[in-house]
Length: 193
Image 1 (cartoon, rainbow, N blue to C red):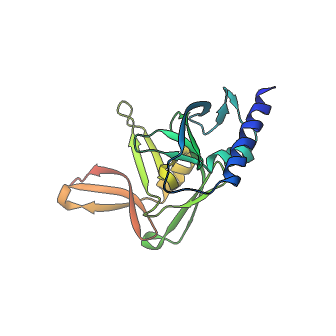
Image 2 (cartoon, rainbow, N blue to C red):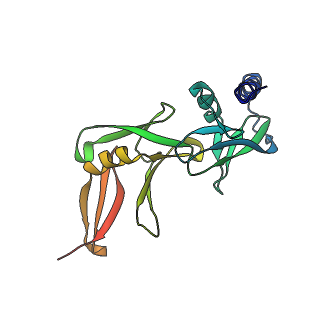
Image 3 (cartoon, helix red, strand yellow):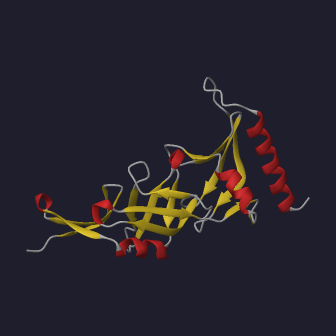
């Protein structure tokens, strides 16, 4: 059996379990440990070190993916849960759309699995900075504790929409964007007089 067939078999087993069982809020899924599935920094999904080439399978697996409070990633069905290795985050934001301007602006992103997500209070933006290079890594929150990292081109598009807000109490200028009436900070700098 080749690796692609193993992936298809795994997907079929998972799908059968999902179809045949209803969630039972009174019990917890059995932990099955780690499985040989991973997600690379570029958003590529792997099974037994080979890329999963069918987007339909990736979408199926992503529909049961969750991240726990410690940052672990799990495939969770009503009966079983298995941990997978994720290098950074499970998804990449590859496209951005915006409507309106200023405080009336709405921004949304499309992920590498064709999922659209609005930048809003339920799906906030956060920007991490590399401690050595200060290079930013922007993320948008998704459902089930998951996140998507904005690719470089999308981040540059977002920065083009950025506005400055003066924060005199802290002697700072906050740089960010509005979406759905909320300000999302991209960065800040010290105010000069």
